[in-house]
Length: 357
Image (tube, one colour):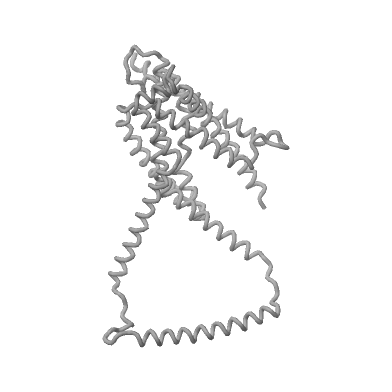
C-alpha cells in the first residue's frame, strides 16, 4: 500500500509539473496573440516585422543561448552519454515523417493536393525543437521529482545545485537534438520545401495566365507568323544537312541504328541517382557545418572541455565573467521571444488567408 501511495504522489507531481510548464507556454503565446492584433491601428507585433524579429532572435538571442548553455553546463565526461540523444533525434524525425505519410493515406486525413501534402509532412516531421523545450524544461526542473531524476551527484548537494544541473543537462540534450534536426532538415526538409514552393508557383502562374484575357491578333502577329514559318523551313533544311553530314561521317561497319544496351542504360541511371544522393548528403553536411547554430555548439563544447576558460567565463568572480553573464542574459530571452513570434505569425497567417480572394 505504501508503494502505491508513493507512486501516486510521484505521478501527481509529474502531472502538476507538466501542466505548469505547458501553461507557461500558453501564457506567452497568448501575449504574442494579443500583441499581433492590438492596438488595432498599429499592432505591437505587425506582420511586416515578423521576419526581422525572427532573424534577430535567432542570431542575437538563440545563438548566445546555445553557446552559454553548452559551455557552462556540459562536462567532458557527460559528452559521451549524449550520443543516444543524437540517434534518438534522427529516429524520432524519421518516425514522424513516416507517420505523417501513413496518415495522409487515410480518407479522413487525406490531402488531395500533393504539393500541400509534401509540405505538411515536413512540418509534422520537423517541429519547433528549440524555443518550446527551452521554455518547458526549466519549469519542469523546478519540481523535486524532476531534478532528482536528472541529478547524478551526491546527496550533499543543495536543491539549487540540482535545479541548475537539471536545466543545464536538459539544454545540452536539446541542442544535440538540434544538430540531428539540422542535418536531416538539409537532407530531406529543405529540398522538399523548395520543390513544393516551385510547384506551387508554377500552378499559380498557370492559373493566372489562364484567367488573363487574350488580345486579338494584330498585323505584327501575322508578320511574326510568316517569319516563324521561314525560320522553321530554314531549320528543317539545316537539320537535313546536319543529318546527311552525320550519316556520311559514320565509319564503315558500324550501324547507327543499333539500340544501346538496356543494362548499360540502367547502370548509368543507377550511377546518376547515386551521384545525386551523395551530392545531396554532401550539401547537407556543408550547410550544417556552416550554420551559426552548429558553430555555436562546437565553440560551446570546446569551451566546456577547457576548464580554465569555462571557469573564467561562467564561474563567480571569473576574470571573463562579465562576458559570460552577458551571453547568458541574452540567451534567457531567446525562447520567450521565439514563442511570441510564432504566436503572432500564426495570427497574421490566418488573417492573410481570411482576406485572400
